[in-house]
Image 1 (spheres, rainbow, N blue to C red):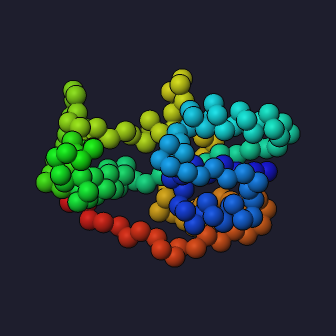
Image 2 (cartoon, rainbow, N blue to C red; image 1 turned 45 degrees about the horizontal axis):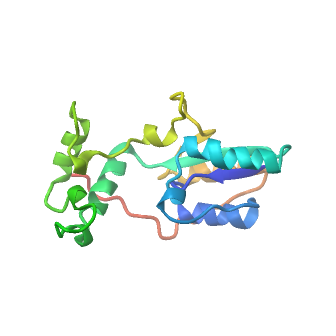
Length: 172
């Protein structure tokens, strides 16, 4: 049994699986790191099924809480590198915009402001027919559940380090 963990799985989990239960590792820039379910199904899974037709491949991802997901975007887009108006992606700059405004504009009806045009987790998980395209979705802040899930699937104890876990930021 082999696993494909979407990039949203913590780096330490991806490294553990690479060392112990993965023959193939996909890594690279943002297009590879932030691979959505549809792209996984069309490109990665289809190739794996051709190369190893009898292999049982299970997919899963770990996602942040939706409000944390947006808070992380807000924090990332507030970085100094985007502050200068001539910088690419400056229109997404949030250093001068509160988290509350980003959330309000994100959930508002109609066209979103560029800084609030954040794709949803559903966009990441869905297939072309609007179904969830991965086998399992786990909360990123519950490493214990990921350890239990993988231990049951693999049939041996899997311990995932909590070293270097991101601390929760205040949302407001």
